[in-house]
Structure formats: structure tokens, C-alpha cells
Length: 398
Image: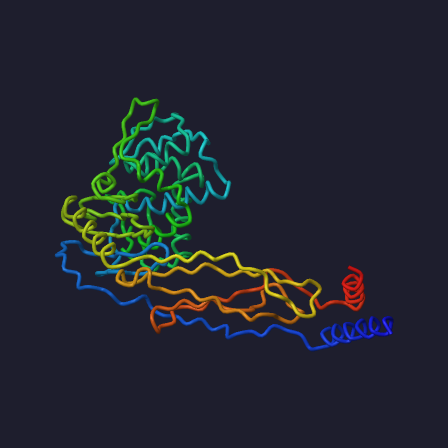
């Protein structure tokens, strides 16, 4: 009698497992559509009276434009040109093509540059890092050319690389003729405020190390013999300012690509063609004040999820992953965005790595801002008959 009962129990377990094994498995996939909702429209009328020819203000992480005025007009940028030079130097460093410790031998051409300079001498040697600091802090034209020659062999070859990179970034109102923005002899060395914001964003979001240079207020080179003071006064006099590049010539007026960060939100503003340095700086401050007063950056880091139970799988649980979500919102809505994780209790094998098994929904009130797919982080095949028997008898014995 007792043996019959045990045998019956075993047969029932076997029948149940076989039905799971033979059933048609798969993932019940929710809709993959993501609701694209624009950033909450909270633009107050921009009341600052500006004598600048062109302006733009963007949030760096999302690239959202917060304010613009004549932002696509191609204009002479003066030394703001150097943002592209700095970007190419940082890309060369981060890709391993050059090292910050490389010693650069200054050429006659580099030493002959006028305007802002650190008075490099032909044959003088200085590290890439020191030269980059000179470019970023004091806008050294001679250091610009020395770095360009070190990377590309000549300034002309480097300028071709600048224009190529601009095209890759979608900078459609840009034409570079030199590395530093000197415009006494240029014919069509121009760039728009929007294009400056594009290359500035690429620089500080992909190569944050540059902010260590651009946030320096005072420093020195040549063992302390030559002092450096940042041409960007916002670094000292505006809370949160951390970059990026100033410029001025009689043709360009006073220009700046400025960056500042508060409460986790990084802003970039571009001012072109202002009448004075003080006017340029005041306009930049007002743009930043407007952005920080009216907008907030929300960043949702993925939570650690427990594995979901797999029916009929070669393993019992499936690990899950999803991407982070970030957005810009009206400051009045800061902290009000809700995150909801939506998952079934189980999924059926087989499951491939990358299959969607659930969603994370982000809402603001009744408005759905985004739905991020939750995906399988590895492949789980269906259990084999051999594995099934092993599990059955392991369970029976233990």
C-alpha cells in the first residue's frame, strides 16, 4: 500500500513536469512602444534685453534647448573655436592615440602665433597636459597650434579633421579655417551658436576631464614662472560655473560658450557678438539664472531586480536588466515623477538574452512620460528530458 502511494506520487510529479516541458513556451511581451513626451513646457518669457547677435541655452545631458535667439546664424566665433580643438585633443587622449604626458616640441609656426599666448619658444618642449591647460585657461593660440601639429602633423591637416568632426556631429552652420579663431586673415571662419552648443555638449559629456582644466581660476606653467588666470570670469563669480571657453575679436565681438552645474543639472549657454565683455558675462548669467530657476534634471538609476521565475526552463530564475531614465522637467514638478515596475509573476522558457519581459513606467500625474523595457540579461533554454529526470529524482531523494 505504501509503495503504491509513493509510486503514484512520483508518476503525478513526472506527469506535471512533462506537461510543462511539452507546453509551448515563450515570453509574454508587452508593447515595445515608448511614449515620447516633450519636456514640460515651462518657458517663461525671456525678458533679458540682449545686445548679443545670437544666443542659446541647453541642458547638457538631454540636449534640450531651453532658450534660443537667432541660434542658427553663422557668425565669427573668435576663440570659442578652440572648443573643437579641445574636443579633438580629448578624443585623441581618451582613444590612446596620444598621452597627456607626451612632450610636444614647439615649431616655428606654433611659436609665431599672435593674440592670446603663453609665448612658446621654437624648440621648447611642453607636455600635452600643460598645453591643453594653456588653451583652456588662457586661450593660448600658440599652444593650440602646437597640439594640432602634434596630433595631425600640421595645422592644415588638423583643421580638416575639425571640419570632418563638425560634419559628423551635425554642425550644419560651421566652417573652420584655423584651430584658434584668429580672424584677421580668414575668409569664412564661422559657426552658429547652436553648433557651438553641440560641440560643447559633446566635449563635456563625453570627456568630463576637460572640466578639471576649464574650472581652474589661477595656475602656472614652467615651474611656476608663468602665471595663468582664466579668461572666463564666471568661473570665479558665478556659482556652479565650471567652463568652458571665451573669445573676442573686433570682427566677432565678445563670445562665450559657458557651462555651469547645480543640483545635478549641467547647463551650457552660448553668447555670440556681444558688445563688451561685461555685457557678454551678464547675458550668460541671466541665461543660467533662467535655466536653474525654471527647470530640474531628473535621473532614475535602475534598481536591483530579483530574478523572475522561469517555467520549463533549464534554470529556475531569470536575471533582469533595464536602462536608466533621465529627463528635464518643469522645476515645479521636480520629485513628482513616479516609477512603476511592471512584471509578470513567471515567464515560460525558452527566453533569449535581450527579450523584453516587462516594463518600467514613468508618469507625471496622469501623463505617461516613458516606458523603458525590462529585458532578460541572459538566455534560458527549455529544460531537457535528461535535466527533467535529474530534477525529479533529486527532488524525490532530498
